[in-house]
Length: 106
Image (cartoon, rainbow, N blue to C red; front, side):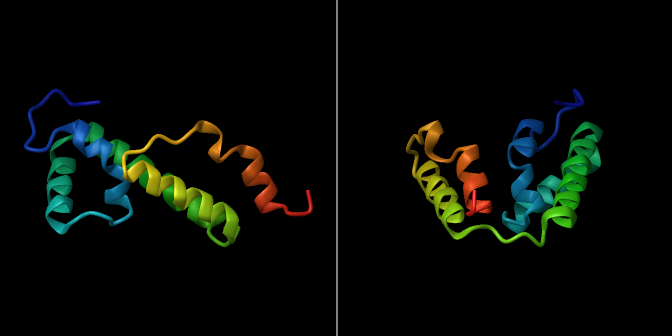
Protein backbone atom coordinates (compact mmCIF):
# COMPACT_ATOMS: atom_id res chain seq x y z
CA UNK A 1 0.00 0.00 0.00
CA UNK A 2 1.30 3.40 -0.91
CA UNK A 3 -0.05 6.68 -2.12
CA UNK A 4 2.69 6.81 -4.76
CA UNK A 5 4.32 9.87 -3.21
CA UNK A 6 7.83 9.80 -1.74
CA UNK A 7 7.98 10.03 2.05
CA UNK A 8 10.79 10.32 4.55
CA UNK A 9 9.47 7.13 6.16
CA UNK A 10 8.47 4.47 3.64
CA UNK A 11 4.90 3.12 3.71
CA UNK A 12 6.15 -0.45 4.10
CA UNK A 13 8.07 0.51 7.26
CA UNK A 14 5.01 2.21 8.71
CA UNK A 15 2.75 -0.76 7.96
CA UNK A 16 5.33 -3.29 9.22
CA UNK A 17 5.46 -1.52 12.58
CA UNK A 18 1.87 -0.29 12.82
CA UNK A 19 0.99 -2.45 15.83
CA UNK A 20 4.05 -1.24 17.73
CA UNK A 21 2.83 2.30 17.10
CA UNK A 22 -0.73 1.45 18.14
CA UNK A 23 0.51 -0.27 21.31
CA UNK A 24 2.92 2.58 22.20
CA UNK A 25 5.87 0.18 22.02
CA UNK A 26 8.27 2.34 20.05
CA UNK A 27 10.55 5.27 20.86
CA UNK A 28 9.06 8.77 20.74
CA UNK A 29 11.25 9.68 17.77
CA UNK A 30 9.75 6.84 15.73
CA UNK A 31 6.24 7.82 16.82
CA UNK A 32 6.88 11.32 15.52
CA UNK A 33 8.04 9.92 12.16
CA UNK A 34 4.89 7.81 11.93
CA UNK A 35 2.61 10.72 12.83
CA UNK A 36 4.27 12.82 10.14
CA UNK A 37 3.80 10.00 7.65
CA UNK A 38 0.09 9.69 8.50
CA UNK A 39 -0.33 13.44 7.85
CA UNK A 40 1.17 12.97 4.37
CA UNK A 41 -0.21 9.56 3.34
CA UNK A 42 -3.95 8.99 3.31
CA UNK A 43 -3.79 5.22 2.52
CA UNK A 44 -1.60 4.60 5.57
CA UNK A 45 -3.78 6.90 7.69
CA UNK A 46 -6.82 4.92 6.60
CA UNK A 47 -5.12 1.61 7.51
CA UNK A 48 -4.08 3.09 10.87
CA UNK A 49 -7.65 4.21 11.56
CA UNK A 50 -9.04 0.80 10.67
CA UNK A 51 -6.56 -1.07 12.88
CA UNK A 52 -7.16 1.38 15.72
CA UNK A 53 -10.93 0.81 15.47
CA UNK A 54 -10.48 -2.98 15.46
CA UNK A 55 -8.20 -2.77 18.50
CA UNK A 56 -10.78 -0.68 20.39
CA UNK A 57 -13.57 -3.09 19.44
CA UNK A 58 -11.61 -6.13 20.59
CA UNK A 59 -10.74 -4.39 23.85
CA UNK A 60 -14.38 -3.45 24.45
CA UNK A 61 -15.70 -6.91 23.62
CA UNK A 62 -12.94 -9.09 25.05
CA UNK A 63 -10.99 -6.85 27.40
CA UNK A 64 -12.42 -8.43 30.53
CA UNK A 65 -11.51 -12.02 29.67
CA UNK A 66 -8.62 -13.51 31.62
CA UNK A 67 -5.95 -15.24 29.57
CA UNK A 68 -5.24 -18.75 30.86
CA UNK A 69 -1.76 -18.99 32.41
CA UNK A 70 -0.61 -21.93 30.30
CA UNK A 71 -1.73 -20.25 27.07
CA UNK A 72 0.06 -17.04 28.04
CA UNK A 73 3.24 -19.05 28.75
CA UNK A 74 3.05 -20.80 25.35
CA UNK A 75 2.52 -17.55 23.48
CA UNK A 76 5.27 -15.71 25.36
CA UNK A 77 7.66 -18.62 24.76
CA UNK A 78 6.89 -18.50 21.06
CA UNK A 79 7.48 -14.74 20.97
CA UNK A 80 10.85 -15.20 22.69
CA UNK A 81 11.89 -17.84 20.14
CA UNK A 82 10.85 -15.63 17.23
CA UNK A 83 12.66 -12.59 18.66
CA UNK A 84 15.84 -14.65 19.05
CA UNK A 85 15.61 -15.63 15.38
CA UNK A 86 14.55 -19.24 15.86
CA UNK A 87 11.90 -21.04 13.85
CA UNK A 88 8.76 -22.15 15.62
CA UNK A 89 6.77 -25.16 14.36
CA UNK A 90 3.20 -24.32 13.41
CA UNK A 91 1.77 -26.90 15.80
CA UNK A 92 3.23 -25.25 18.96
CA UNK A 93 0.06 -23.27 19.68
CA UNK A 94 -3.05 -24.64 18.05
CA UNK A 95 -6.70 -23.72 18.12
CA UNK A 96 -7.36 -26.68 20.41
CA UNK A 97 -4.79 -25.29 22.90
CA UNK A 98 -6.73 -22.04 22.98
CA UNK A 99 -10.09 -23.79 23.35
CA UNK A 100 -8.82 -26.25 25.96
CA UNK A 101 -7.09 -23.50 27.95
CA UNK A 102 -10.12 -21.23 27.87
CA UNK A 103 -12.51 -24.04 28.78
CA UNK A 104 -10.68 -26.50 31.06
CA UNK A 105 -13.79 -28.64 31.49
CA UNK A 106 -13.79 -29.57 27.78
